[in-house]
Length: 188
Length: 196
Image (cartoon, rainbow over all chains, first blue to last red; front, side, top):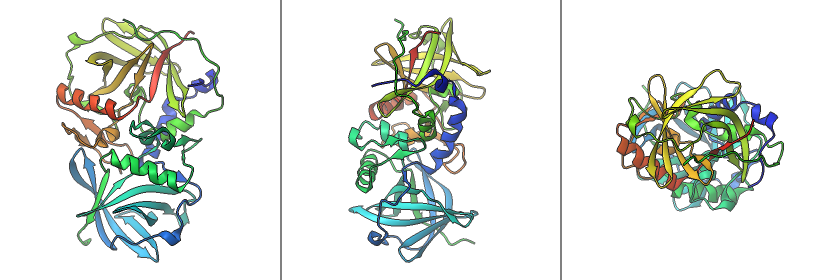
């Protein structure tokens, strides 16, 4: 363990920056600025249609959001009810019933430059999602040190596709999923 | 025994943005000391008897640091004072302060109970040598644990922008899950005594 930042840096606010942390928390921060997955390897394991996002509240599953999953070519689009934003995703197989989702936000007619990564696992009733953030990955005791992401100025840094696959896989093996997507009822 | 002592400052890697860890952290650092109720582990009323409080930390000036890429990065400096068994933590350049009491739950683990207006917020501490490590326990992380023996009541949801809070109803439930949390996760930050 080496150093400690200088005093002037220290004085800069923890508190104000923590507000930023709260916003990052929502989207997670396993990201890259260039794609780690080739779109040509994308698969289509999920049916288009309406889904409920059911949140894991400590073993109690609570429906907190619903939306529509559509597809264009190899790209899935997820749009939550009442939202104009969209998540555009390709899905890549990594193990039996396990997939890495490479997603970009589409907002205000613009596709974000960042790629976000999640792990999806197909289950009987739909699929479950693991979306750890940087802290979740770095402090998990089951995560071998080489798989821990490095922190850059704004995000977690991964070395590439295999790093993302193994880090998310290790996390999922030691964790409960955050969300379950199950086929939902057609919107009235 | 007082577990925090003043350590000389080491010359460290410079320029590592505190933004790096604060942006990707989802919790509030030492937590709950800067935490509102969102994304915290809470109870409505106190789960510990104040008579059982312990005082393992010496009052003084402390540097709160986070572990980033194997280096300890300073996040805030403040003063810890002690009145009876009640601690008060006040960060420099901040008008607010937080009062808390500390309870020994064994194996060098302690629970800090921070009194807030409408609830008690909990943080998990661990004594490691002369430093007091903090786990930065947040509701989101508790819900990631694969098996919860005592599921908390969860308020809020991930879409709301303010995170969730996990409410426990008994001391046994809280302590059981916090011990498991420490088995699954490493501490993320620490308090180190520092000279003015």
